Image 1: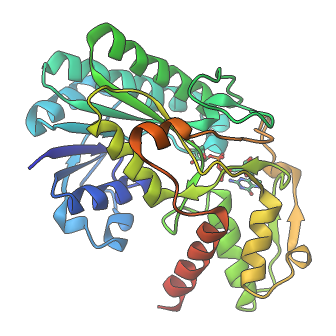
Image 2 (image 1 turned 120 degrees about the vertical axis):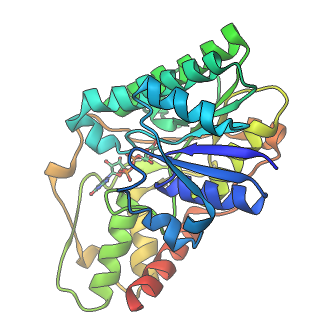
Length: 321
Ligand SMILES: C[C@H]1O[C@H](OP(=O)(O)OP(=O)(O)OC[C@H]2O[C@@H](n3cnc4c(=O)[nH]c(N)nc43)[C@H](O)[C@@H]2O)[C@@H](O)[C@@H](O)C1=O
């Protein structure tokens, strides 16, 4: 039986990954900054909280990281911890850099120091590419990040690549494009749209206020994407992979799918507000994940339309209970 440590188990990806690893018969340790205080609502929602050994770990604190690794002796570590909101990274740039970049470095250093044969997955991000234009980004595309979050993820990416080369660590980064699910908090645009549209369909007179709805993204299904994380660590040779559906849509198309599925005309219920615009944003993100398809045998199973429908369905079930 293998043992995995998931840093950041309370988030969307942490919860789905924990579920996947439990199904694969792993001993799963779930790391969170304060395991006594965190609510782990996502783990409860997937009915897996009792099956996970929860541990307190602050990846910003080398002592805490090293102690946890020496105690758990994991075969695999998944780093899903740190700031995940691009928008918030403009308000908290220092915390963003520390939690993502220093946090990743602490994990790499502690793995190296422990001398244990641990395989390491690092959560990278398409934010590193910045604007791709219409040219699909792959693993060779240069990084031109346009947010403090993207800059921090780019630094962490290169730290992982350097430790892989310099110290022969089995360390990989998944460069994941946007991936959504019913576990997404409303701070992210997809769930904000789903939740508001469902309230409007139920009779709420509110208006959905958004920022730039002309941006375009490649939106996939989070449970698909955690499988790619696991696949990366099963490879003999570690490497980095772009993970995406390969299809990009404007935000206004996502809005339309959600409102249509609820029998509403979206244009009657939306207002844009410049206060939701970011100081710099990505206009469009196109992805080429053919390396993952070829080497990991991974393809995204859900389209943007299916992701949108599943989110609406889950929201209606959750709010009816
Ligand atoms: C790959 C990447 O994916 C995610 O980051 P994100 O793309 O910033 O996600 P989001 O849902 O906050 O924004 C998407 C787009 O939608 C625009 N937008 C318009 N109006 C609103 C609005 O009202 N709220 C929000 N949040 N965004 C809005 C906003 O300006 C942006 O262009 C994270 O998982 C991150 O961890 C990650 O790695």
